[in-house]
Length: 192
Image (cartoon, rainbow, N blue to C red; front, side, top):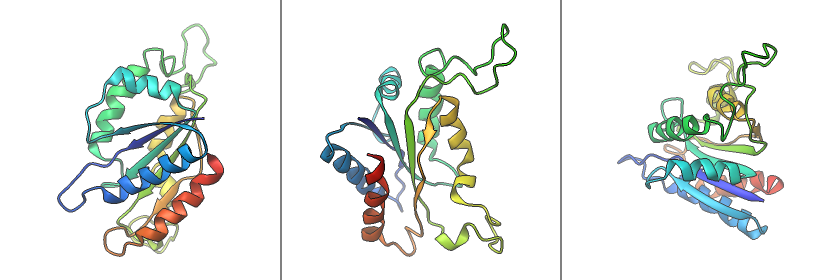
């Protein structure tokens, strides 16, 4: 299997990215240990847009390590998506938005050419109790996949299918890093 791992961490003075780097290391070591080929991309290093499109064409599985910032992905990964995925819309990753003037039955978002899977690994400052509970102030009963719905749609747009999302919670105020890394490895193992 070909595994692309994208570390979307954007460093800040209060968040250097050690947890994201450790999660990427766990995923890469596990994949390589099972005999899979691995390529890595990180937002802190320069990348070639065409090479990133090729990595997506090559990958059977894309693992995204995402520290959730302001209820979404870091700005540097949003820039990556704008550059790489827009370039991929020119025929490599999808046939535009899937619709056709010749065939009105084709629906918006149905032009994806990829048959790969993706797995999001999310890290939150929010505690786990903030999600899936109607009595919680901010998320009002919504879960992590509800929050990341736009990301799921982005990958579905390219024909990719989702694996169950992994999440680490309260990583800044009440971290449990050792257990998070063990849980992540257990979460990944059946999918690699």
